[in-house]
Image (cartoon, rainbow, N blue to C red; front, side, top):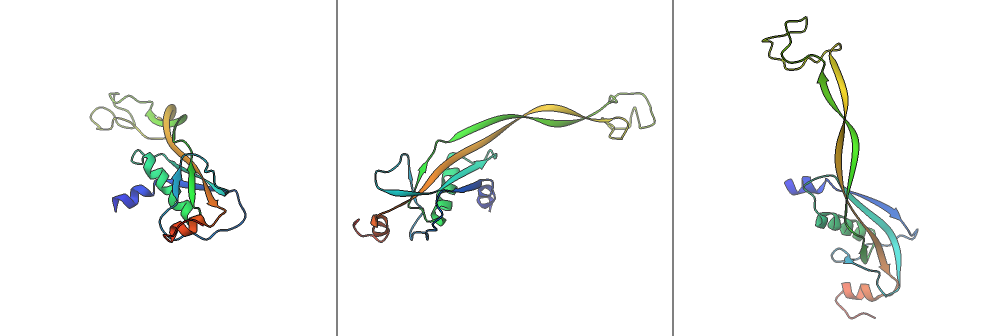
Length: 159
């Protein structure tokens, strides 16, 4: 169950490059390629997998792309480079204008056990820098123009 939850931490976006629909090929997921093949092919779609989870690695992103491309009818996916994108954003921190050791006041004081006072008069939000990391992997799903892949999926020699 934990693996299913962790697998849900990956988002896959699809940018179609071809208007013609293709049925999925029988067998396993498409092959992962590092460069364009020499055989004639059609680019089906660009798949972009992202995750901001610390528990997702490059193999998980690649796997999600391959599974999605298989449903799209791809024979192979030309994988792009994995990247880790660092961004600085503005976050919030919650602070009180009262110090924890203040004298007795209308809102409490010494011995009240409250280190901060969250009320409309003494509560503020302060901006702070926050660093976020986004894992990024992309790939172009392709479908071969000849019938060689269909024969390979059925165990026969390419035509």
